[in-house]
Length: 205
Image (cartoon, rainbow, N blue to C red):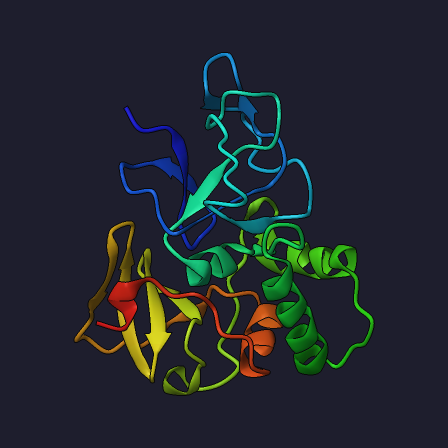
């Protein structure tokens, strides 16, 4: 029976056999005795995206009173949900993300805490996923941006939209007429400024 620890682009956490390319956390949000989620879906504004393998360390998933292991299809999915790269296991990526954040958002010497504060406002609206109006035409969004329409999530790659699922991305022939932005605007500006999110192989196939 799969654990409830797979994250959708809307930030929901569900159970599915598909694990994904990256892990991460939002603090401690599970009961290790039952390996089930608590009612809360975050315990800290630091929502991070981590490597599934780092220095050979292995963690029993959701078995300790430590951070709750969550899993994402890819980095675009984690960004859409409101996460950012971890400064510990993904330090180089996190430093590139911060540099692009500063360029894209017109700030300098930004701390992880400051980024978390901005992201926490942009990803949530009274506890629910906050959607944003598109700041540019859909076809002009950068690779790795994600949008939502009719309860479905889509990745933008080279001006095309691909339908998201836990198994990967598939082409979507029908045009989207009222998409809303899932990726937090500050993260979108970070991507525009040059940060390239890690995408699942199906996004390029």
